[in-house]
Structures are given as C-alpha cells and as structure tokens.
Image (tube, rainbow, N blue to C red):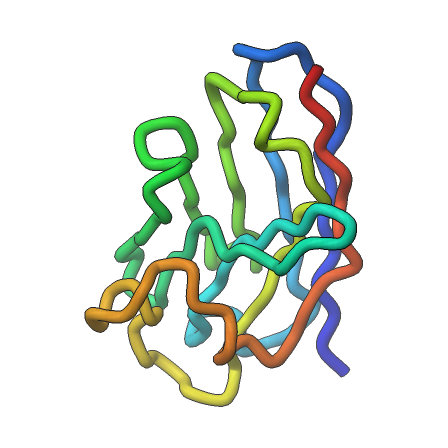
Length: 132
C-alpha cells in the first residue's frame, strides 16, 4: 500500500519562503515521476512542478524562477522549495506520483504542458499554504 505524506505547509507573508516535503512509503520511489499540484477551493487543480526519475524538472510559468522541486531517492522524498511567495500561491498543495509508467519522463519533459496531472495515480492528503 503506497502512501504519500506531505508536510511543511503553513502561513507566510508575501515574499517569504516555505519548503514542502513529501515522504513516500514505498520501495519503488526512484522510478516515479513525482509532482506537486495545488488547488484553491472551488477551482481546478493546477500542477506546478514535477521531477522525473533522473532528476529532470519542469515548472509551470507562474512558478518558474521561484519554486524548486528536488528529490532524495535515498530518503524516498520529494521537496518543493517555494521562494518569493505571492498571495496567489495560497492553496492546498498535494504531492503525487506516477507509478504506472516506471522511469517515463514527466509530461513536462516530454513536450506536454508542465502542469499535466492526468498521469498521477497516487496522491497525498495535502498541506495548506497560506500567503498573506
């Protein structure tokens, strides 16, 4: 049974930083495209960043230059460093994984939109980020 557990959310002033963490309880972590997706209540989910098995990253334009996604396969963890936070970054942030396509590059690294979320088949419970 796969579990993804996010942590690190909270409240921060505009311009500040937060670092989100996601721990995956599985033995096959290193093969998965991992992503961070956010959702504002009542709105569509938005993929913001992803990192595939070999460390290639992709970002949507709204977070480029401000957010950095990374992974530590030894710790089965993926991270999202968020700097220069804006009010519009306020959302529930989810970690997600695509374990259906081992070692397949994330959509943003295959010529698709970096915010594509359709291939993720495991999701965490989310962590709230509030920027004021």
